[in-house]
Image (cartoon, rainbow, N blue to C red):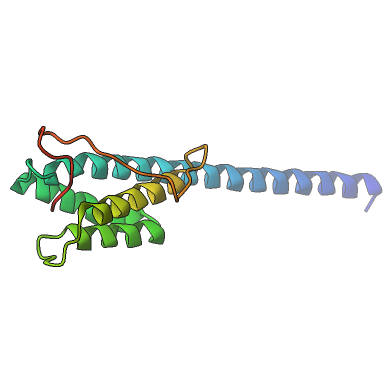
Length: 147
């Protein structure tokens, strides 16, 4: 074969490889962006569902909404969030007769939110030691959760 044909074939193969790799990376970024959007929607749904299990506002629909939101997180959230969620659920469960003071509840909820924000890549990065969440309650008497 002549060197011109070999050069043409090499150029075509290089272009094909470049197009394939470019397409693959573009699709990968699209999948990652879609997953981030899905996570954000599930995290938002979870935060909204917390209102249904706050002291002074506990009701059957609220508990059901909270349960559904928690179950969805089990599908899409990374393991550190699932671990933080389970710790929070165990502390706030009606069946927990060893429930401690509100400081443990607040610490577990803050840790859960910290892990969610970390997963979403919130910048600037939060400091785990000083990160604390406070929620607004629907009633004037209490702002703590109970499930």
